[in-house]
Length: 278
Image (tube, rainbow, N blue to C red; front, side, top):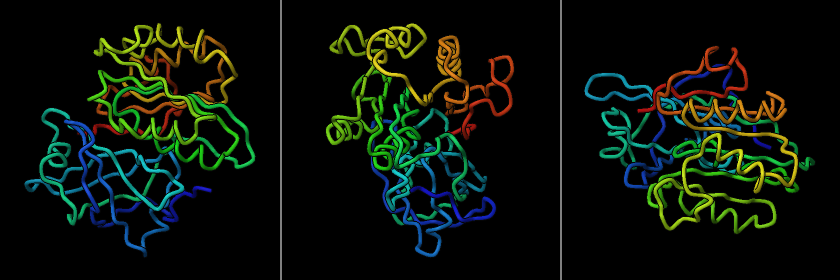
């Protein structure tokens, strides 16, 4: 079972970078070589994130990134998507290399849900772009721990080339063929099936609720993406009588932080945020 960090409080440690690998033209996967003596402090639950701190040109830079590796593995990895003008994302894309050292804060956040090896549940995640990162950890960990549970991932991107972890979800779907279903939605791919072409938005979810997601009750929903997308999808689910505590939300990339005006109360189904992640 995944366990939280043993650290009594979130603290920074200097951790070497094991590798930096290109995912897409504008994103990289960063793996860390966590020293054995820090292993328990860097344990994490799926859906948690780490804060990265480094000194760029004499100015301290601090960013939050979701952990994308499975909590049942010994790997700690994050994915960094480049944002125009983004200090850390530009550094990660152009300069960061294996052997470099970054300051990492021990894992925090609570986007995931408690797992039970004896449970038989049905999960759905709806993400857009880099929103895949925490959900990839949740998906991998859940399927490994809850061997009778099922998972559906709705993954929105512009096209195949812009898809982060393009092969990973498909490999997982092949491995867990009887328990995992991937639904790719693409907005700029004219070769993609017409009924799955467009954006991940409220009309799209209404369509899916009448087709791919209509077969079984859903125990937990995970939504990750821009504020407008997340709030629209969450509102629709609540209108369909889904209990608020079953809708888990996380937002990335400096999107406007949701508040009461967006229909969110304090701590209302929100996970750990990354403001901003450039």
